[in-house]
Image (cartoon, rainbow, N blue to C red; front, top):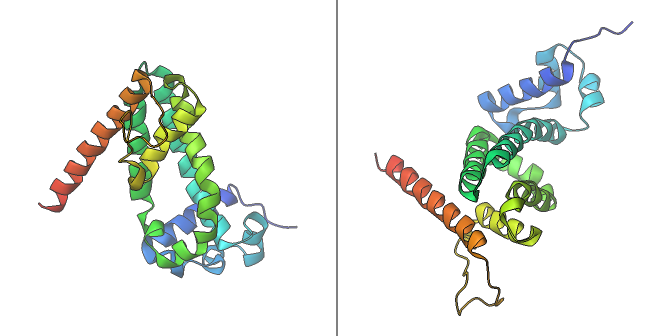
Length: 196
């Protein structure tokens, strides 16, 4: 009769996280995780089809906690500023917590094919809490896109140079300005930390 191990999936995820922190993504294998958890390699494959799936599950569990925090903040917010600040803080904190993965060349190569397919989902998840402050779903996603990529942070809004000719409401521009203020504050804080 096979032995029953309580919370094995959680233990496998935790062990993978531990090994990534200690040795880097490249050193982690299904075999090393199985050995550390006292199970066979086949048992790990019953839960995760690959090392990438195991690590992605670890990231997803943490990301869901970030989305929950953002959602709770949005539910009690009466203006977009605290929501945008929360989104930005959750993105920065998530990236900081998982920098061992995001800065590892082997991890980046392993996940490179899936980054673009999840970008739209990420944008939608982050836009949903902003929806109540925006004119439409596109506007919420537009604001979120400026949070996700530095290249879009310099968007031209309500100016003669706006190539789309779109006129944004005061509420949308306020949301954008709140983000810009938060972003500038964070940039200044990071710069100060680097120079001390």
